[in-house]
Image (tube, rainbow, N blue to C red):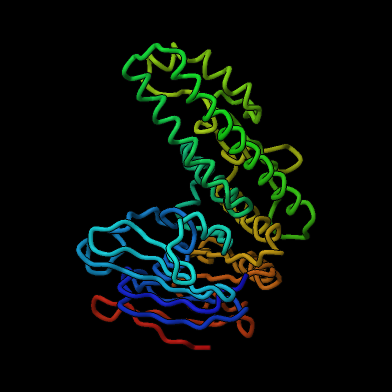
Length: 359
């Protein structure tokens, strides 16, 4: 998969932007607030969901919720367009035909890292769960549909719980749907973690490998057996009814990580070690997806690394069979990429962003 063209219209700080792309990493630099991250966010919208900032469609228009925005891209020979008109939800077309968002996941494999993700190992479980599902989606585009099916059945079950409905037949139907979708979600997650750990183990890298574990809300390994999930949901009904919501299942899963000979938990590691572990996962994710030629988005990653670690990261990025987009506040942070990347200088001109292509 190759992304060869990107065009923005009224997206964030960009009234217009058109880029022809090749295989080189793209290093985007400029002052804070210039609009660098907005380019990466636009790229992230070429995947299902709300992109790297989790923004609602009406919040992405340059002139506010009453305006619309568009992103166009060429992926291999496919023309892709996504956007939202005033007061509308997000739409997607592929080759001029309406398509569901989940279709984007099969067309382009996107991986991203943002400064907000630096707190991943100490943040709430739901943050790690979203990160895990983004990794999983890069391997299994159908994961999004399984998650939607599970969420719909769970919402219906929660409604019964809040209404204190006691008819066993309604619960059995919904719990069977949750069990089937939940088992698929867990299998997808487990396979994604196995592939990432395999990619870590098979690479010479300056970044530490992590041992990854899928955890349930009670701290034990999550369940991939639909019969077991259904039985657990049935047994939990009295407790769930008292709470008014479902308290067990893959929507409560967590991601555990540890590293080194002492199996140090990521949450207890230093800030630098936590960042290095996170980068290790992103790089392993890209290596594992090599046949699909993923797109890797690294926002302000250089500022958090010393010079030697930056050079090591750039060496790994240029060696990957992937398209990479990186941002930083100054070109000097990309010095080790000279001669190996394309440089774009972004500045703010009034209310809009402007770009100079430095080749």
